[in-house]
Image (cartoon, rainbow, N blue to C red; front, side):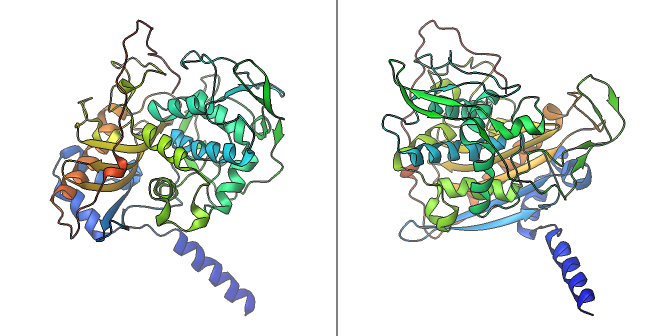
Amino acid sequence: MRKLLVSLLLLNIHTVKAQVKTDSLLKDILFRNKDSLLQTVLNNPEEYRYQIIYTQINRDQHNKPSFKNYYFNVDKDRYFNPASVVKMPLAFLSLEKLNKLHQPGVDLYTTMLTDSGWSNQTIAHTDSTAETGKPSIAQYIRKAFLISDNDAYNRMYEFIGQQTINRRLHEMGYPYIRITRRFRKMTMDENRHTNPIRFTDAKGTLLYGQPMAFNHDSFDFSHINKMGHAYLDANDSLINEPIDFTKANNFSLEDMRSILQSVIFPQSVPSKQRFNLTKKNYDFLYRFLSQYPSETNYPKYDTSVYYDSYVKFFFRGNKQPMPSYVRVFNKVGWAYGCLTDISYVVDFKHKTEFMLAATIYTNKDGVLNDNKYEYETVGWPFLYQVGQTIYQYELGRRKKYLPDLSGFKIAYKKRVEDGRPAVKDADN
C-alpha cells in the first residue's frame, strides 16, 4: 500500500511538472493581432514549440514595482536550445566572482590573460576590439551583449569554471539550469576542465593567478531532450535520428526571465536570488544590456551588419531603426532553429514598461545542423509581431500610477569615426 501511494505521488508530481501554462489574457491579446504569420505559428504549437511569458509591471505611489506573469504555451519540460542566452547569467557571475576575489588592482577592466593547460584549450592574450588591445571581463561582457559574441562566452565560462557556474545557479534557486559546454567543439571531459588565467597590470606584472579548474560534480541527465528527426554530424553525414541535447546546456524560459528580473529589479526577488553585485556593476550591466553597436567605440562594429535592432528581436522587424524613446534591456539567442529573446522594455516618452520572454523553433525540414532554418521568414517576424503586439497593448493599458523610469536613462556615447576598420564578421 505504501509503495502504491509513493508511486501515485511521484506520478502526480511528474504530471504537475509537465503541465503547460497558458493564461487567457495573453492568449487573447495575441490572437487579436490578425497578422497571418503570427496566427499560423500560434495555431501550430507542436511544430513551432513556442513559449511566451509577458510580465506586467505596476508601480505604487512610491514607484515600487509589482510583477504579474502571464503565460502562453509555457512548459519547463519542453526543451529548446538556449543558445546565447546562457551568456547572460555568465556575465552576472563573472562580475560576482570578481567582487568575491578581493584582489587589489583586479576589477572588470583589468587585463585578463587566458592560458592553456588541458587538451583543446586555447589562449587569449590579445583583443583587437579593446582600446588597450588586451582582454578583460568588461570587454567580454560588452561583446556578449552588443552582438552576442561566442568567444566572450567561452572566456567567461573559463574564468568562472563549470562547477562554480552550476553550483551557484542551483543555490540561487535554479536547480534545473545546466551549463555544460563552451561554444567550441569539445568533449564532455574537456568542458569540465577550465583554463588557467592571469590578471596583470599595465606593465604586465601579475596581480592574480587562477589555476586550471576541474568540475568533480555530476549532472542529472535523466530527462531526455531530443529534437528534429535527423541531423548532420561533424563530418556532414546525415544521421537519420533526432539530435540528442540531453547533455547540452539547459535553461528554461521561466528561469531566463527570472534571472533578468533579478538584475533589473534586484529588490523584487528574494535575497538568495540576487547576484552579489555593486552599484557600479549594475550601472555597467544596464548600459550594455541596452546599448547599440552604433553607440560603441570599443568594440567598433560595422553598423550595416550589426544595426541597432540586431539583437533586439521584439523590435527588429525589417531592420528598421529603434524608436529614439525606447530602450530594450535584453539578451537573445539563436541556434539549431531556436530563437529566443528575454527583454525588459522601457518607453520613456509614454511612461511604459514591461518584460517579455519568448522562444520559437523554426526547422521545416526537421534536419538540424544543416543551417536551413526559417529565421528570416518565420522566426524573427514572429518575435517581432509578439513584441509589437504586447508593446501596443501596454501603450493602451491604464495604470493607476505612472512609473518614474529615470533610473534607466543612460547617457550613451556617440561613435567616433577614427578610421579604424569596423568588425563585420564576428563569431556569434
